Image 1 (cartoon, rainbow, N blue to C red):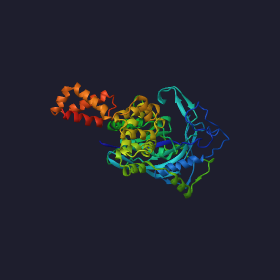
Image 2: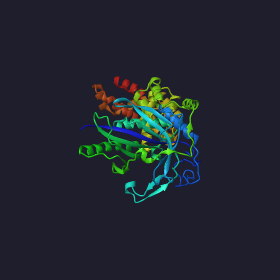
Image 3: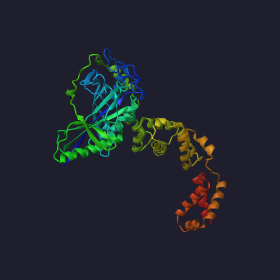
Image 4: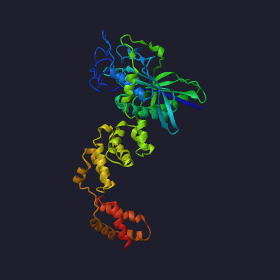
Length: 481
């Protein structure tokens, strides 16, 4: 039997506020365990939460960026569950009246354009972190609780089950992450836990309208893990169904080392959480004026920026897609573009040279030492003939490592391109005299010999000879013989 994959995602985004959602404790990443806590975020008796207004602002901005309807009236609810990551045995979240609903994100896949619905975006507090004493929760003898993260503000973005495979999921998450970064509501760093994804996946026979039984895989903190989970769960559930079994509705965890999902607990339905309105927090009233004020404050979003780069700068769709997938990368491109006109050359250097070194070093673009105006100056030096493209790559590597200006590196290392015909004529003559066989090959019509001779001249000049001048002089020399 052929099965159709049905996938929805729940994405938790840690908001970039200075303090927690209901108290003044800091939200900064790290710190000694249980030092960023107070009676409010620990839920001690006699304390009252007060909503951080910045959380509301960020939630609305995210909703607007994802084409959501913004609720004029919403409220907070208590989600009751007993688990050691929350000391008060409930989480303050939103249930039936979320701040945002009915949005969408457009994606591009090999199958064409597709729209992924956003069911809702709601505000909530994060739970604490359990530090397991083994490789995974299922293999640990015990766990330690760090409540620094408890009360850190989150938005949970719940998609419709509109995705049909790993490619859809990856495109959705890539676009969502970019939108979040562009709005400035979060740094969306998965490695630090500020963006985490739960995948809900089920299978159904092709043509069937009813959904199959889903499994939820929790707290995936890398795109690679999400992709591997989707592929593994499709195989696991397919095997169960083809062997006459039934998929169990449950929450599963991902063992990255083994490359498998493991059963964690039975999956609760909403009624099992016994939601009720939080009596300590007043309902949230949002005016049209406030919504429009926030809408006007939104920056140029990825799709708009991508279209501008294609239509105004003449970039290919692929280049524009790669660059706009990261706000930091798009900002870097715009910074170079402000000082240099050739958009395609900028994109080539960013995608080939810059990204290669960023990925090799395993660093964030924000940690790169090169400034946009420095790259623009380097490209101008190539255009003017002061250095060759080959030398420029060498200079760029040094700029990446040190942050020095291109001109400083060129001067320090004596890398100025040689364009003087008098000096180059001597090199050409010496190489021609030293390689009579290649000269004869050229005369016999073997054009590859020309490339060999040019390479020898470049070697003799330590890569500093102007290739255009060399080709001209060499052609003249050979044709005169």
